[in-house]
Image 1 (cartoon, one colour):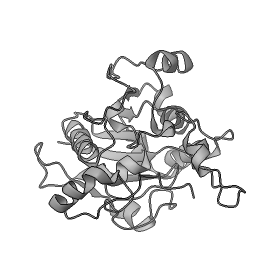
Image 2 (spheres, helix red, strand yellow):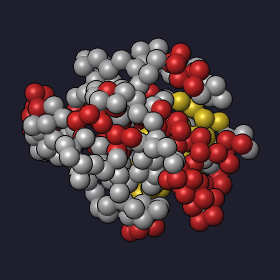
Image 3 (cartoon, helix red, strand yellow):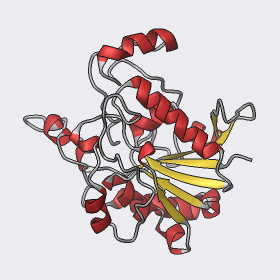
Amino acid sequence: MPPTVILIRHAEALHNVNNKFAHPPLLTSLAQLPNSSLTAANAQSTRLREHLREEQPLAEKVEMIVASPMVRTLQTALVGLSWLIEKGVKVELDPMWQECSDKPCDTGSPVSQLANRFPQLSFDTVDHAYPAKPRDSIYGFTSRAVVARGQACLKSLYQRKEKVVAVVSHSGFLRTAVSHTKYANADYRIFDFSPDSSLKDPELVEWGSTAANGGGMGKSEKGRAEIVEGDFPPEELKEVGEQMGIKTSREPANEVPSS
């Protein structure tokens, strides 16, 4: 039977900082931060951990943690899920769960650097191609590649033998390719696979509690969120959009800002 899945967005990273009142605006420069870390206080990850331990009984049943090998997702997992890791729950690093865009802030670091920075984690499962994002690969910043990557992630989860799996990933990827819902920083949603799902066509159904609450922490926007204008580069989205009934794009995607 496919597992129940807790999908978690990383805590606030440096490129997520709300700078709308800055003069001049910092958005462009923040997006150029390479593989940005969490903001210094890291308070959101701590609150996530406290909430999961004290208010979400399902979290105690997590048997596997899957995380994108970006710095911000690793930091979030190590703090927000620390009590699970301490009791022996394995952390599997999977670059298929990395963010969509090819901006510096959404592009990973070489595995050798990450292994030195996070010696408590194993990077044996990280694809040798990481962190490159060639346009014609599964990691490419195109709607076709991202949607295909999301389906591959769902198929991988569908086949897992654990009963409960936690995944630490990114808002853009989760929204456009996995669950079609929005996530505030350090918020989560819980899903089962639809009874009509199959390995060929896996589909998630959100628990009513997190859907109605706007995420487990109540910080996220409610409702379904499809691919929209601005999510992907324009040159190939028009063709895919015509096939899938989605809007066309003019600008590259941005992450949902922190709340």
